[in-house]
Amino acid sequence: MLNTLIVGASGYTGAELAFYLNRHPQMNLTALAVSAQSVDAGKRISDLHPQLKGIIDLPVQALTDAAEAAKGIDVVFLATDHKVSHDLVPVFLAAGCVVFDLSGAFRVQDAEFYRRYYGFEHQHADWLAQAVYGLAEFQAERVKQAQLIAVPGCYPTASQLALKPLVDAQLLNADQWPVINAVSGVSGAGRKASLTSSFCEVSLQPYGVFNHRHQPEIASHLGIPVIFTPHLGNFARGILATITCRLKPGISAQDVAEAYHNAYHDKPLVRLYDKGVPALKSVVGLPFCDIGFSVQDEHLIVVATEDNLLKGAAAQAVQCLNIRFGFPETQSLL
Image (tube, rainbow, N blue to C red; front, side, top):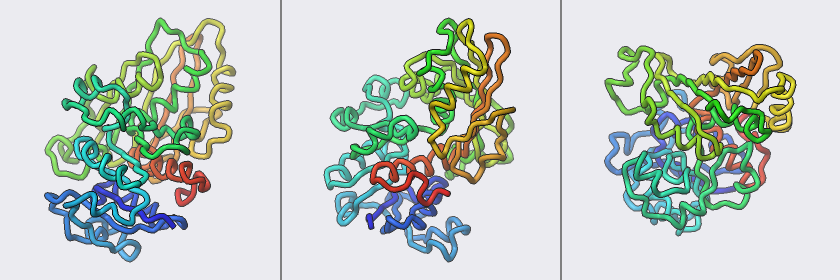
């Protein structure tokens, strides 16, 4: 059994992590923590998330000393802000923990990326260089060896799972950048109260136009430029990405289908559609990314959908955990 700590456990993603890890036969959910300033400190997680009543009634403790909290812990999940993760990750790594960081603090191995898109100077170039990007379907061999796994963002997961098989098979016309229009539910903004993400205030609106930090994360790991426009929708959870591409001359729908089959025929958490495209309702509450597409002449439209809190966060983190320690890849997820 591996002793496990979740930091940031009171948030939406933290609660999903707690649920998955609590029922994982190889994991001992040892402690739940939040920052010392959090109003949730001292409360039971089942009082904050009533769906966990009678399942997980552990208290959420204030994290005042990370080195002390690391004692006896094998695995740490950080469902925290990137600045918090930036400071905590080296402490837990120094204590010998395997760390799964769900923030953006170690996702891109480029210090300039953090200056430009996150607004801070990255102080841990050594760990940044060693971090493995946990896009589970494509990084399994590297994840198996890693001490620090940087779990991708929710938008980048859906976008890359839709595009990477096409990029790897060299099917796309480089003269036209893929255009990703993606809509997320308000849970993606986190549990903290904010007028901009208040359910009654949210309509359907794009944000971060041409300057959202997930754009360079997607482009960096795909190795091609993309146009990415996120939207906030007035629903609770899930992401649906509609991606417009241009194929090279002579590429057929069968070529596209073959590229997806080759990439995902043995990947249990990606579901491909033979006909039509997926809807959001197909994945909410489930750990899958569903992908469908349509081709007309040289034009390709791909639709990918996932639960932003699950395949876009907690489920992918647990999937990476399973890969890292040699457990069945879908252990506790299905």
